[in-house]
Image 1 (spheres, rainbow, N blue to C red):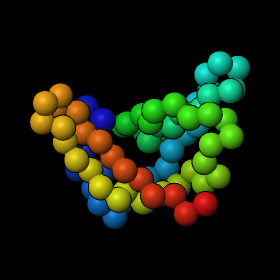
Image 2: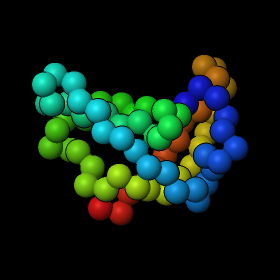
Image 3: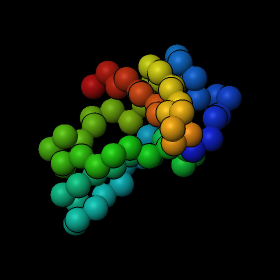
Image 4: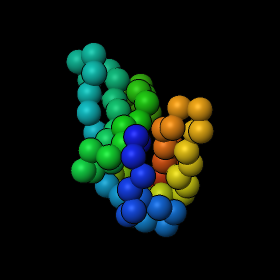
Length: 74
């Protein structure tokens, strides 16, 4: 995440969209509406849930980027 969003804070519920790379062998997730993007995961590591709760938001002082950790129950 590149900007601080008022509604993306600890305890907030978020929804993610799943995207695909390499003909579906790799998946990634984007917090809706296009706020932050995950790293890439193998297809077999795909999430079962699309809604989660923000566990933490931290800012990397050297890059200025924000990192959002989301907890999914599934």
